[in-house]
Length: 312
Ligand SMILES: Nc1nc2c(ncn2[C@@H]2O[C@H](COP(=O)(O)OP(=O)(O)OP(=O)(O)O)[C@@H](O)[C@H]2O)c(=O)[nH]1
Ligand SMILES: [Mg+2]
Image (cartoon, rainbow, N blue to C red; front, top):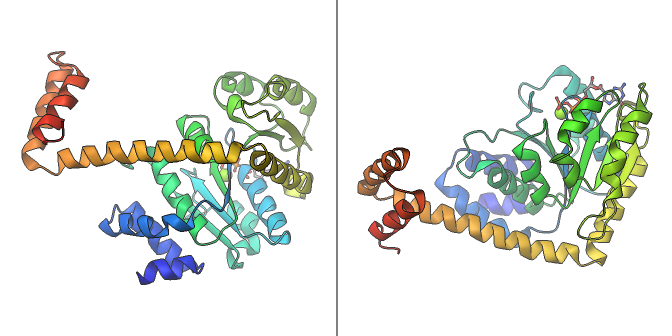
């Protein structure tokens, strides 16, 4: 496939085209994913999460410039951004992106995941595979807000960075249960503003707890707009990746991810097998009604559909 060949050589247009196929549920998308699969798994994937406006995009662009200096190719994905990087990008983001878009070693993409059949994690994982296969060595995935997508990204990412800023005390409390558990690195950005100490104090609980891998989460101050703390943060990102490699966690997680990928693919294929039969779509809708009326439970209904599809 010519598209895949160009993609594997790092052609940005081919990558953009492949991502469009994925987003349009084009039949060719599965072939592209299949063809690039053996060429994935080389990139260091970094999830960037945290409340809106803490400076995640500014940080990502600053980090991208730093990793370019370290001769790494950098991919950037914004997931469900309030303002997409491309197309309708806010003037501010465009200024922050600067010359990065012209750099051959940088690929930036915004993606919406609402309405994606397999949900955020699948859509994001597929786009990340494209960036990985095209040779991006460091891939940043930014998600805004505090919801399910953060947790999904953390499962895909090797390194999870949670970005906070001074003056968000209550938000941090509210987020503790979810996001604070996933962070490998906690960044207090906008350290030029007042209230840094109380933010650090709020986060201190999160960094006391060792991760199951044995990694102790780290905390760092940055001023992304002035490139302060960026080299330290880049060092920490590399340190975490080295830790994952040396402790064997990277390999264990690779197998864990493969298992999840197969599980997801299996349920999707079973689903499609059922829905590709027109007569079963009617049955599917009947069963939905029955489940809603508590006349049948979802598991029995699933068994029934699999039986009708000749699978069970
Ligand atoms: N004072 C100060 N302002 C900053 C700093 N970093 C970013 N900002 C500003 O904060 C605003 C938000 O920055 P973004 O990078 O867009 O924040 P974000 O977290 O990506 O925002 P969303 O994607 O909307 O969640 C911008 O006006 C930035 O210029 C910083 O270190 N100090
Ligand atoms: Mg942003």
